[in-house]
Amino acid sequence: MATISLKDKRILITGGARGLGQAFAEAAIAANAQVMIADVLENEGKKSAKQMGAIFTVLDLRDPKSVSNCAEQTIKSLGGLDGLVNCGAIATGIGGPTMSEIDIDVWDKVMEVNVRGTWLMSKAVIPYLAKNKSSKIVNIASDTAMWGAPKLMAYVASKGAIISMTRSMSRELGADNIAVNCIAPGLTLVEATEYVPEDRKNQYVTGRAIQRGQLPEDVTGTVMFLLSNAANFVTGQCIPVNGGFFMN
Image (tube, rainbow, N blue to C red; front, side):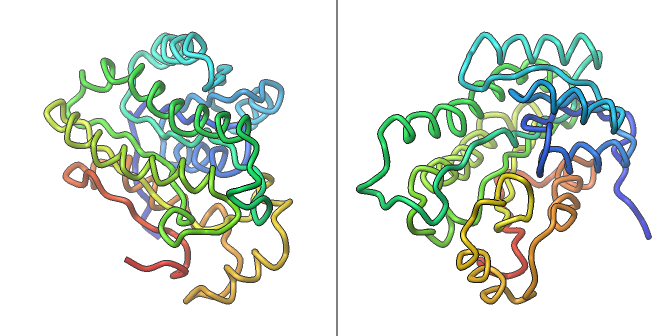
């Protein structure tokens, strides 16, 4: 089976210590990329990096200084940068509090990490990506923002912002030959979704055209394509990857 090549590509993946971020890192390494993973989970990140043959740096997306240090460490370790995957994010209360019940501190934290963190991380690496002929930014949104998942408003709002930011970023960065896209995965079976109520998981399975649980490997191929030279003329797009739960 043919595989996508990321040979000679240097990729930074935030949120890479576990879950989808870890899956993206493993897939990129399998495609012959050099990979830096960054995460606030230092012990897990170091362990994951060692197991997969990546490099690790600590990253707190709420801290602008930490974001700047992450960018500097990435360039120092990899010698440059060809792609960024903005996967670092938090979700709270899936199928839980209504919009009237969300705590304001929880709302602010979700926005700080998911929205402001994506902006800060992208901003920090743009000067390095702009040095190349065809660099890539892949933002990780969520299909919850496309179908309007209830009782998850802070997360849904943050991922809707990621979709809108992707379009704006693509227009601003196109002149620097930086393609910016995002994917909108459905509920994926990883550590971060273990607490999701069974009725919400079943809603996804029965509502999909392909009626089964979504695994990390169902998502990685689309991200690898968007990081590759095959997607040099694809930008400003949001691609749902959810087995047909939501369709454009």
